[in-house]
Length: 198
Image (cartoon, rainbow, N blue to C red; front, top):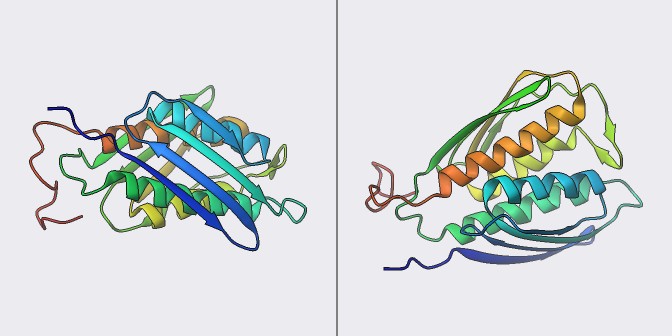
């Protein structure tokens, strides 16, 4: 029996951002990304590609101020989309992890679709900006995703000296980890929790 495709669309408008995010968790990794922040677009494309998620993100934000609202609000919308696309969560693996190298950088990502949004990270990013992207917003983005998707999310920066490499390794690792966690397994019967709910 063919399983239903898990897709969702979120439109989110505030005085600071106007965002549309669409995702298919059972995709092939295609991406249509336009946030106005070039490096951030590049990172979101990595989530799609490494997560096998077909992902559309269009955002018009108040970039005349800075990139904070754009990056954080896209994280909020992406979290909502992941949660919505997961549906009842029946049959999912639930947890995923990846240790991703990029040259001298090595970043671990471990996550649990637990229903409890929480982020822990220890990013140490030497460079404050990558193009128009403020690197400290990496934490804000992943916190927004975790809280709004109900994911317990941990990152450990094992090593790394180049900020681009560290951040890219983190986004790639998240993509791989989320792909593993949302995967459906015939061995998983019902909701993968002793509580019976997630």
